[in-house]
Amino acid sequence: MTLKTGFAALAATLALASAAAAQDIKIGLTGPFTGGSSSMGVSMRDGVKLAVEEINAAGGVDVGGKKTKITLIERDDEAKNELGVQIAQELINKEKVTATVGFINTGVSLASQRFYQEAEIPVMNNVATGTLVAKQFPAPNYIFRTSANDAIQSSMIVDEAIVRQGFKKPAIMADSTNYGQLGRTDLEAALAAKGVKAVAVEKFNVKDTDMTAQLLRAKEAGADVLLTYAIGPELAQLANGMAKLGWKVPMIGSWTLSMASFIDTAGANGEGAIMPQTFIQQPTTPKRKAFIEAYQKAYKVDRIASPVSAAQGYDSVYLLAAAIEQAKSTEGPKVREALENLGKKIEGVVTIYDKPFSKDDHEAISGNIPVMGIIKGGKVEPAHPEDIAGDKAVRVKPKA
Image (cartoon, rainbow, N blue to C red; front, side):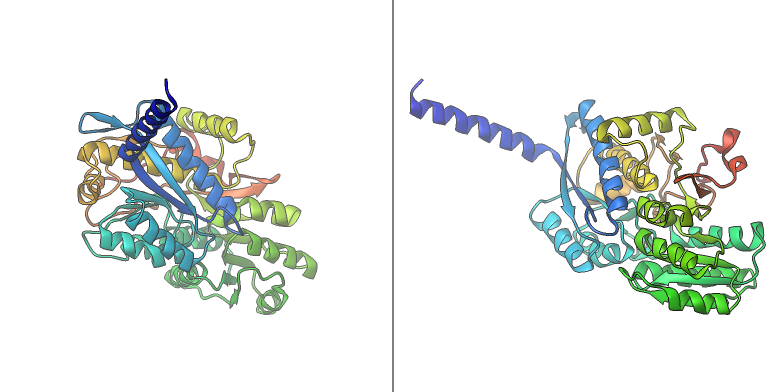
């Protein structure tokens, strides 16, 4: 073989490889893989990658009789709204993705997903929980969600604090982000429905390390429980701040109290914190056992940093793949319509998805699915084991 012939053969091989890659289904994967939200973002990303590896190992997604593999286009949005917007435009206009999975932070989601809506490209929001996220646009709506929205969580938080545990004087502690402030609004509405008003409503910023003033105001107001809406690092500062003040009241808040960045930074001060969870890292079903073991093997960890994020990310990929197969197409409008009319049951880690979406309902998780978790011994366990006993282990969305 001459040098010229060798170059020609190499060029042909590269061209074939490039063509093959171009025929893959390109899925965007976006979230904060660095920074304070990274334990959520990395866990979600790894759950997504695990699902994609399983699907590709089985031959890929059947698109009209042709098995096609998934290629992930991964981008770190650093939990920054403006970066999320840039990434959305890149994934849509340059990478030509079929869909995108991800979004951890409500603010990033609300700022970015409008570009997908305009481009008619489906988004599977698998962690962001702001109540508005899946309702930001009227039908035809391209935004879907596999996490428990804040209206569900705030109701659970208030039920736990006021009804189940009998506290009378809640204080609300929320960060200043869209996530924190929208969550605060939902908490106040849920309290009002029980005829209760918070004795103190306090705000702090992301990266704040001293919440002494806010905690003292809540203490002086006679608060007997803290209801929280923030992410792990700042929640840990709240728990540690209470310890420094010698003031201990229960923390009951959104699912982010389960983040490794809260558990590890708060240490003993975080023990007993309670939060809603769609998934607790326990092998309560064969599907969950297989997922936990596969995740631990793939990423060489024992405790998943954010089990909820990992499980919801994993499930979102299987729902999207099922929709593409049903649509027999990667065209956005056809995939959206298939998601709204899924004919196949999908056994996920979080739940069994049986027609999880409709034209007017893009929330896969209903209020009966999450349970309350509690921090014990540095990990999340069921707060009320009876809630997941027997046939309650898998909770399924009621049929419309």
